[in-house]
Image (cartoon, rainbow, N blue to C red; front, top):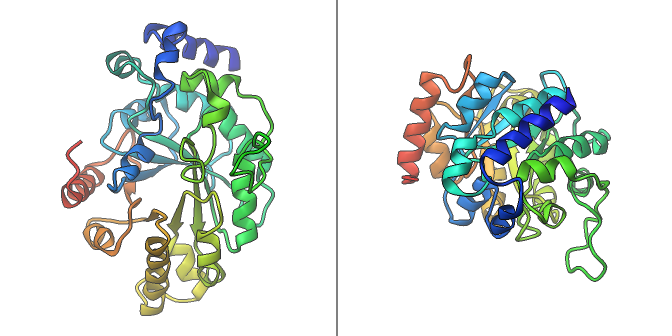
Amino acid sequence: MKKKCLSALLSVLTIAGLASAPVMAQDDVRLNRSIETLEKGDPVFGLFTGDFSLANARALARSNLDYILIDMEHTAFNMETLQEFLLGMTDSQTIASQGNTQMRTTPIVRLPANGRNDSEWMVKQILDIGAFGVMFPYVETAEEARRAVASMRYPQPRGSSIMEPAGTRGSSPAVATWLWGVTDYSQRADVWPHNPSGELIAFLQIESAKGVENAEAIITTPGVSAIFVGPSDLSISMGLPGNHPEVQAAIASVVELCKEHNVPCGITTNATDITARLDQGFLMPTVGYWGDAGISGSTEANLRTAREHAGRTD
């Protein structure tokens, strides 16, 4: 299976002209389009998906979504399936036309492990396959945040100004280098914006009362790229319905801290609250859930509303 996947990837990159010397020309291209958009000050819009079919991969790769959260928290944790899905998102026609391997839709993988669990081995496998980010559920303390970030980082070169959090990721970059189509993967495979040249998003979920209490310490942990509020688990943790004023106040307190510290914040939204969440300051909201392949009509409508409200025309 692995040989089959790698052969398919080689074919894609060869067709695009990026499997040989010309790849060097894109070493200065920002491959994580979601980071590129956030650096412009614009919000990015995502979607959770648990449909790992190639049809869904192709449809999402050409959607107007900025990122997808490949949900392996509540679906099977299968690295071969993930590898096939990432290969399915590799759009050779787009690569050929734009001259680099930047994916229009950034793939980020949500782990099954909570913040308090040991997730280093999961993170290592996910990143070695070529994902551009990892979402960590149920992070409740700064120490859990630090361990999450460390698991995504290689140990830094001696004398680096960003040594901490000290990386614990082992080196085996061949497949990810191949998928990204760069010659300097190990230098670019670091967390943004802690490393301004980093292409990886460390996406931490705050979804418990304890997480809210420790929100500022979590948000300000070096290497945290973005925060995602999980309103359903948060309301359960607080023992209150999701629309209760205390739950909404907790959500508001997290996004305010994110704004204060210039850290993008996400949350699930729908047609009734997407514009309000954008006005509240959320820069990484999801706009729906997956359909049979690609995005449903209601999700597409929510995405269109969100992009128009944010003034996104790209």
